[in-house]
Image (cartoon, rainbow, N blue to C red):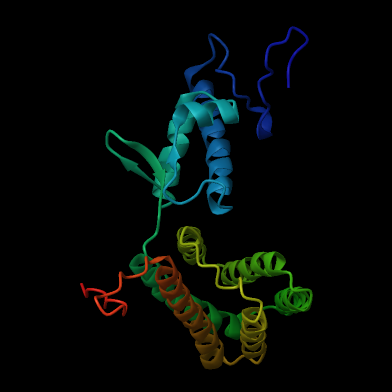
Length: 268
């Protein structure tokens, strides 16, 4: 977007904050608030790009390119990097720069284990006190997931799946659990699992969600906690299998031996 004179217009950001520096003579506190607000907007946009995969795991975040792309100065951008590092989405390497984190399989497994424990707690608590309106809401989400299964719409199913679990955690009213859970989910998204890429897995997943809601509705804390725990552990198992399968497909074929048979791979 350009002005009549041909100069590029400064993009406007939500809340009336723009990419331009604070006006000359502005009170230091106002200038700080403007910078902080802008950094939060930049952080949200970079987080969106990372979680959508547009900025892939391992990608280097170049200040100059991103500042130009987002229409901001480097100050708010660097503050956004700091917030993203605290959130576990990027890492800073001395003398090299800032990179999108690439979660290794062993760390992904640890996240699954912790998430399973949190989800078991959530299931138990909701079985004891979920409100009728909330139960109706999560049932509607499962209905929508089952429609996505019938339509073979993996993308919609994935988004509904994330929404379903996030909403259950939110319904506990425990802000610390919600905060920890969301951080774990964001970190786990950096591990490109693609568990639901195969259409046959979606009906299984949808059935597990239906069982969770059924146990919560029955007020059975033991069954609800177990259903949520088992659901996460099944996802963990699928993740490990998919990872090993991708590793096997990506590994170069071993050179044949003198008799033409493939050589055995060296064990490490």
